[in-house]
Length: 69
Image 1 (cartoon, rainbow, N blue to C red):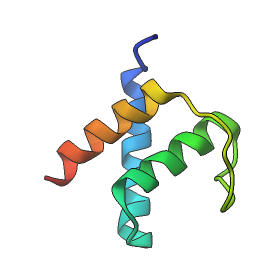
Image 2 (cartoon, one colour):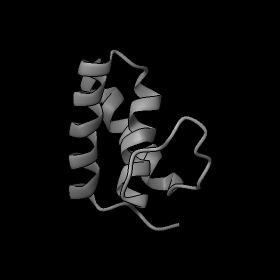
Image 3 (spheres, rainbow, N blue to C red):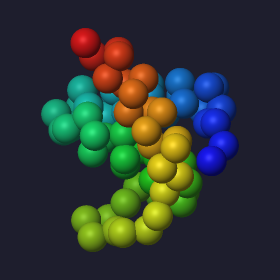
Image 4 (cartoon, rainbow, N blue to C red):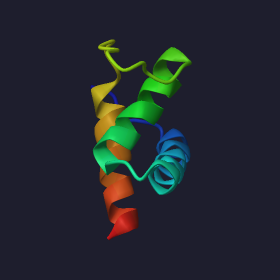
């Protein structure tokens, strides 16, 4: 498993927190949505089950959690 690029992680955290603020969603879901968009080029549809980079998702989620606490 490769270590995610910190610049990409930071950019996705920023997008996740922006989505969280506007959509009033759950942090985990917002992080998943932006990582999905980064990986596939589009935000997921309601039943989209395509795989994403799990290491990137976990890195984004961890940094986003640090930002909101």
